[in-house]
Image (cartoon, rainbow, N blue to C red; front, side):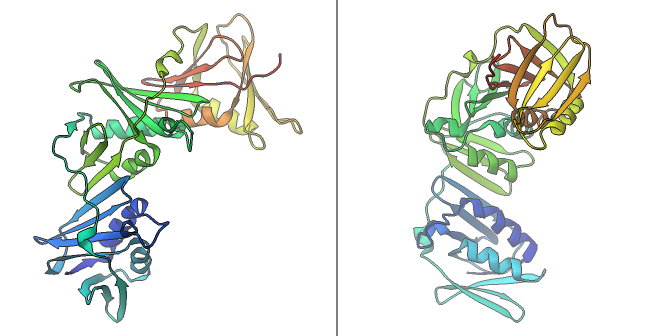
Length: 356
């Protein structure tokens, strides 16, 4: 195997392969990146069995067909130190030689024929969603996906395909985030995508892509990349029963004023109390050792004052994903979950219960 490629192209691709490497065991073939030159095309793969990515590159010269594997971390470290010029890759005596002018590196290989197979696209169902809409929807709910929850299904995002709409759902048990799109032609189904895969999809795909799935895998592909992930095999909680059927109070508030006020009182402590009065909203820190307080003067159509106590991060995460100047906030009573809404995106937040 031999090929020449520009540093910028190979560095970008090898860098994008890093999240899919097994970096805990350098003796495993999955710590290696697979490279193959075939039909004037370079194929690069990386997988840890749970997820994987394949890139196809046509911008190569000085070609000899063949295949190799090489430690992915070591390869990237070398490429980053080279100059912005062409790099020659060549297999010599079961080593991958990397050359640029007077610089030369030699890395050992494993048997490329033993590299794990990737998921075949045969017999997978198509998920007909505009890729940009998909990315925007999952980006909104990503902060609400849990980490290392014993209920492993909570460590991913649910795509709940209903007859009329598609819900994208995540919860860390302190909040529930739901974004939705209209369902045009997809049959009803549910899949749970791991959080790491959700994050990598957002990095890899910025334009139109094909999305396919079955009970075990999700595959996303475009002209440059093919990405696969194993799905989480579990039953996602019945999230719809958490969404309030009715609200005692529901009114719009300025997104900019909310962000400014919350950040002002959370320089020391992230937990805050927000009190809603007929003519004002008071923000104050729940830090016992100091006092941070600010107020917005606004007329609210409410009969009685009430409050919410909450980790401000949950509100700021929601606000960072919204697009309108105003968002809706809804309540029933103090110390009960409250409701945040921006068009087709909602978040239900569990409050901190305070003694009255």
